[in-house]
Length: 139
Image (tube, rainbow, N blue to C red; front, side, top):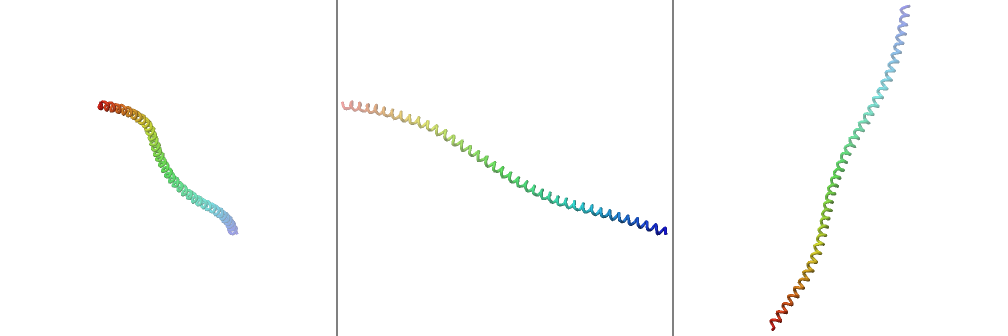
């Protein structure tokens, strides 16, 4: 009977240990489920980060392309400004030459007027000389 009593105690103790182990396994299962959920969340977050990284790479490429276009536009604008400056400098030189030409034209007009006056006086003198020579020749 003592053996049966010991067996009953051992069986009861074994039963308690099995129950405790079952509780531990149940707790471990819950922990595994939480870990699996966390891993799934991390996987989803990793996919989101990967998508964000791809979007950032694409945005970086787009910004690089926009910067290249902007730089080309700046270079073209700079070239056009230089050409415009050359054009304005040419116009300024043309106006300066035109103003000098106006002064030269005024002097030319004055000189032609003086020449015409001198020619008129010379013609008068020449006419008088011819008249005098004609009168001397007739006498």
